[in-house]
Length: 490
Image (cartoon, rainbow, N blue to C red; front, side, top):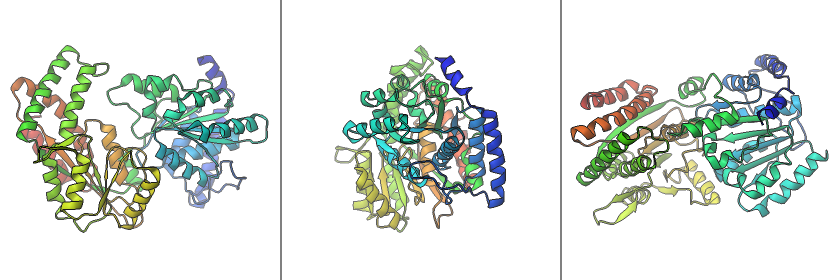
C-alpha cells in the first residue's frame, strides 16, 4: 500500500511546482499581495479578485507543496484555513490538472459553510449529507461525466457520518487518482471507524485544524498525522494571528468560583477515586474507568451552582451590551426547588426572564434554517446574546461576537482554543474582544487526595496563564493566576 502511494507522489515534480509558486507569489507582491486569476467556467476553481492571500497563507501553501502534497495545517481558529485550502486546490487544478476536491467535515453546518466559500471560488459543490437520495445519484452521474471527459472538475463536501456510510464508500473507488482529500477539523478523523474508511489510493491529502492533537489519545493523533502528513512548519499560532491582524486582540477576565458544600464533597470523592485509578494505571489512554471519573468531575465543575450567582453579578452591570456569547456545559444545576435543569436552561432563564437580557439558545438540536435566523438577529442586535452548547466549539463563523462568557470548564485545551477563536474573528467596527472565563477552585482536600489534585490543577493553570499572557490586560490577568499559584503552593 505504501509503495502505491509513494509511486503516485513521484509522478509530480513537487520541487518545480514549489519553485513556480514562489515566483508567482513574488510577482504578486507588486499588486498589494492581491491575487488575480483569469476567470474560468462555473465549477472550476478560481481565486476571485476579492480574496487576498496573506503572507502566512502563502507560506502554508508553499510548505504543503514542499512536503509533496501531504501535511496538516495547524493554524489558529479564524485565520483562514478554508481559503488556504481552496487556494491550494486552485493551484493544483492549474498546474497538474486536479480533477476532484473532496472535503470531509464533522458537522452539517460546516458543510454549509464550506459550500458558501466554494461558491466564492467559482465551484459548484455536491453536498453529500443526510439521505443518500439527496446526493448519491448526482455524485454517481458527475463521477461518470468526469471519467468520460464531459467534465474536468468535481467538488464534493460531506460529513464524517455520511463519509463512512456504505452509500458513500461504494463511490470512492470511482474517484480519480488526481483527487485532493481535505479533512476539516481533522482531529475528529482519528477514530478507528473513520480511519478504516480513509481512501488509500488518494495521495493528495490536507488536514486542517487549530488543534490536530487529540486530547488524551496519542494513537488517534498518530492516525491523523500518519494519513494526512505531519504538522507543517511554521505553525500559525493565535499570537501570530493577532499580530498579523487576522484576529482581533482580546481582554481576558478570569472569574474564580467556589463549589457548594455538597458539590465539594462529591468533588473530593471523585478526586480520591481518580487518584486510585491513576495508581493502578498512570495512562489515561485506554483506561475507561479513569476517563469516566474525569468526565463525571468535569460535568460537576461545568455545572457548578455558584456560576449562576457569578453570572448574575457580572451581567447586572452589562445589561446594555450586545453581541455576547454564553458557553454552557451539558450538566445540570441544582435549583432551590431541588429540581435539576440543564445549565443551558438555567442560564437562559436567568438572563432572559430575570435580567431582561434578550437571548436565545443555539444548540446542535437547533435546525439549520433557524440557526441562520438567530445569527441574523444576533448580528442586528435584535438578540443581545446567544446561549450555546458545544456546537459553537468548531467551525461556526459569527464574527460579530464581541464578548464570550465561558461557564463550562473543561480540561480539554482544544475546546477552549476553539472557543477563544470564535470571538476573535474580525468584524467591521470591532477593535477588540472580551473573554470572561469562570474557573472553579478546588475545595480543601486531605493530603493524599490533594497531591493528585495539585498535579491536575498545575496543568490547567499553565494553560490559563498562557491565555492570560496573550491578552491586552496580560499583567492584570496573569497576576491573578500567580496569586492562585501561591495559594495552592504550585
